[in-house]
Length: 150
Image (cartoon, rainbow, N blue to C red; front, side, top):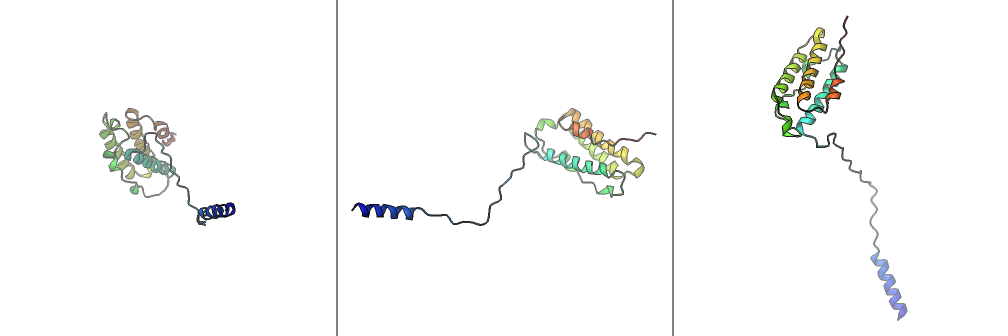
C-alpha cells in the first residue's frame, strides 16, 4: 500500500509540473524615455525644444543658400500649455509676438543681414526667459552667432 501511495504521489507530482511552451521570440524591453524636465513635458516646453533645435541647425547653416522661408510655424506659442500656468505672466504674449515677428524678419532676411536677424530672434528668446523661466538661458546664450567686426 505504501508503494501505491508513493507511486500515486510521484505521478501526481509529474503531472502537476507543467512546462511553459518556449517562445523563440524575445520581447523587446519597453524603454521609457526620461523627461528632460522634472515637472514633465508640457506643450510649451516641447515647442521650445523644437524651436531651439531648429534655430541651432539654422545657426550651422547661417551662410548657406537654404530656403529660409521654410522655417517652422510657431504660432502655437500663444496657446501652448506651459508647465506652470504662472509662466505665462509678465507680458508673455508680448514676448511671444515679438518672437514671431523676429522669425518673420529672419525668413525675409538677405545674406547681408541674416546674422543680425538671427541674433535678434535669439535676443527675443533671451528677453522672455529673463522674465519667465531662467532654466534654458545658458543654452540660449550658446545660440548666438558671433558678428565679425572689422
